[in-house]
Length: 201
Image (cartoon, rainbow, N blue to C red; front, top):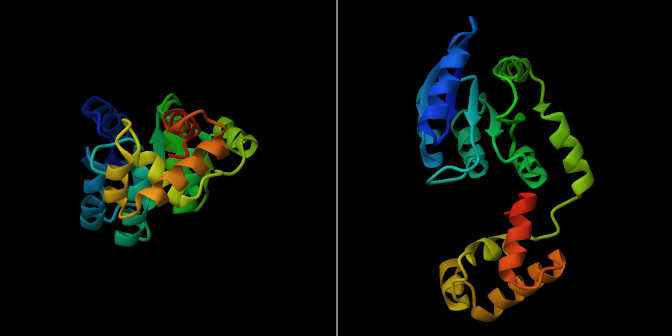
């Protein structure tokens, strides 16, 4: 049997995935969690073959949880299953060590087949998204520019961003200015929108 942990914040979606996957003779769901910061504990306890992980969850994003999963159970293959099929998310997931990236509107039979392929050692990526990722190019933002841009959400003052990230206000201004310039945006709000649309933040 292939054992699976599901990390999905929507209860109905998590229950539906569990029920559908349990219909397969060779798949079993050993745990489900609703928060990104609960995935590591579930993986540590169950040591599943596969962790199916959503991206946008409370506590910690699925992308950030990949490192926790790999640390707790190196043999567990991470498959991102998300509504947000963005090229930047795909790149970040694969860079972090995910073995699969699928969008939720695919049929469950395809998900089950992908789980089997990942367990067999393959990497499985939604084909349309893979093509988009190739055409989108690399993320032009540095890690620090991403951090500062993300922290600016809601238009919070630069002084608060600086305090939150332990940077000087001048440094925060420089990072924001660089991010705005690289993205061809008019201001930091537009830069954040553009970066999110591409999956870079």
